[in-house]
Length: 85
Image 1 (tube, rainbow, N blue to C red):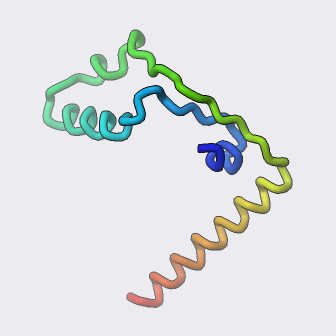
Image 2 (spheres, rainbow, N blue to C red; image 1 turned 60 degrees about the vertical axis):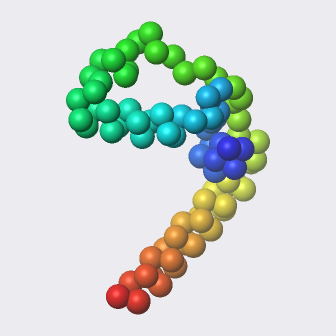
């Protein structure tokens, strides 16, 4: 998560419950079939318990170069996929 914070240039919070991805999938499925309402899931009383906050630690110039490299890699990957079609 430190890499995410560094590349985004923003703090990233890791929740105490590390299964939040599974919980989110369950909420989405439940919303779709009417088990829950949005009000039940997103009520103001429901607060995520935080574990750790990762703060950016790399310099802005380094961050920009890393993001640029990542964008180039993604672009090359899409180019390869286009050629195989």
